Length: 135
Image (cartoon, rainbow, N blue to C red):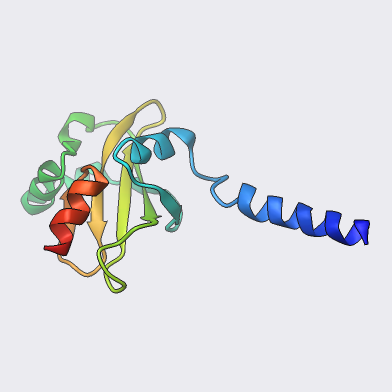
């Protein structure tokens, strides 16, 4: 009986303890500083082609409105990672955080709404966001 309980305990600890093991601590702290909690990573990190992204005025404008000025990082290798957050506006509207970073620095993040185009919103405190999205 003790062996069965020990095995169950190990599985529970493994399941809950490893759920966010691949999320860099810096990313988690950044998102948490706005009151959000990461549910899970949404895919693998993406290496951005800044030369291609910066050619589009609308893309530059969208990122800049969201608080990310990619022009400052031209010539550097920039990555983005999308994370699903634990809270959302509704059952049909998933809210994600997209974190931008280089090998050395965190550049910032924004919120992404699943059912909106472009669906990019400047990162903000969760309470303020939730108040706005429900109105």
